[in-house]
Image (cartoon, rainbow over all chains, first blue to last red):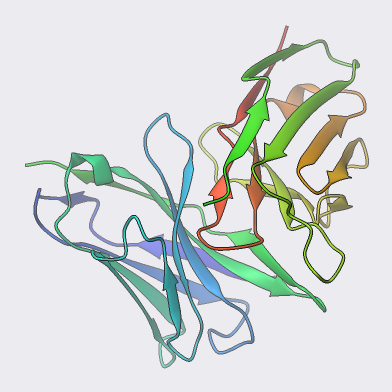
Length: 121
Length: 112
């Protein structure tokens, strides 16, 4: 069973860059699956940030695409998320997720526990 | 973007009684493979969303059979046959047909 664990600085200053890592265990980052990042602002609903394939191909949410970068590190079996020019509105729990392929691509199948990142001076 | 609309916003339930949540998409979620790209999740307090149903009606591994999903195209329903205390939390639908993936606003299920 694949397990995902988010980590990174939990406090980021306004106008700074939010950086998170998602460590993957129980599976390879190079498997035929897409990896996604989601976020959830306190007390609010869920938002898809974007997705990445192990080849490095990405799809980003147009609402964030000018500030977000995703990458994979095959040697460490992990993926990363970077969001620049952050404001208080970017305060949220950030989740990484993996799709599952069973003949069909099943999006949002596995989820990490999430990491709360607060943007504050 | 596909807009997902859930109802009701809040659902007080009595243990042992059934419950039903509706999710409507602004456009059809029927893929050309014949499957609906619609997931249901339960988010318990302090936890990440857990997948209950995918492809509109297939239970994820380990999900009790009191949960069922139905619907096609733009209208979907999640039903809980007999609610148990452990079913409290916020339920979300999510469309996976096209990016950006989008979610319904959530339905909070609480015990009366």
